[in-house]
Length: 365
Image 1 (cartoon, rainbow, N blue to C red):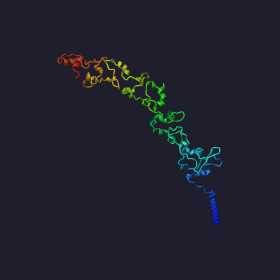
Image 2 (cartoon, one colour):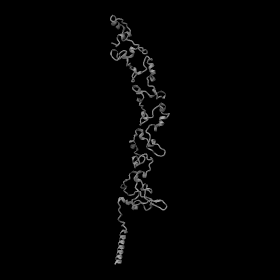
Image 3 (cartoon, rainbow, N blue to C red):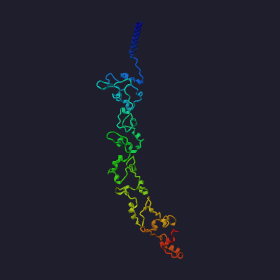
Image 4 (cartoon, one colour):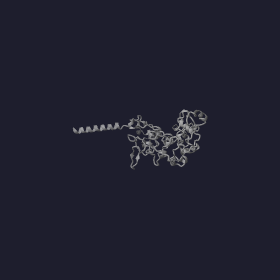
């Protein structure tokens, strides 16, 4: 009985195996294209999606494939790129040949996916900026970048003329473009302007600081506006004076701040003498104009800021300007006939003389 059982089982197994081979080996109908899920990347199984019958190497210019399904939609110049520019031999899973080379192959999962910019675009920045090219560049063109917007978020926002300067004008490197650890000091870019003999005044010999922003604006070199308050505040008429009038001989550092260094001629022309008159012009004059002059401390000698003598010109009482302390109370202000009639017989020791007037009338009453 056992041989019959073995024979029956063997026959049944052979019949079943033949049926499996027939069913699974049956060719698919050419009228119904095989369907693949996106994860299987069915396009790799239909050669005509990419290749032409003329040559394997020549790829169709318009490959019908929804690239957005891969998570990397094609925009801008990427739409014009050929498939093998990104999915080339080095990016594909190829088969090894006997000679040790590789041939481009398409396995079940298709070519290796490109996930980062540097997979195709080698960065020239030596990892000194983000590897995400889109932070500065766009898919339309490399040259027009968004680096300006990125720069505005740094500690050195670009304003004025700096906004139109090429990146490599400040970020200089012979081998590659480095964008980190660049000094923000003015002198790091403008050393030539600072030391140039043509620059007037010569900043180095004049002793100017290297912070250009103290005098210049980023919009243009000229006009330069010095923050003179850092050295000596300019008020009144001094605001209209040319720099060279005080800083003679291109001398800026160590320029004297006393009045006589600039106004010696005015002091002499007015008939003032030293030490009769103070060398500090502000004792009598203002920075707005030379005239009218007002000796602010005059009231300690004789009140002129109030009473009958207020508003008088200096020359009315001081006809001889060169002599300090010389004054007159006499004609034409106080005529002798009037003073004689008023004082004779009333004031003992009356004399028509200015010093006598002051001794009795020290407050001008």
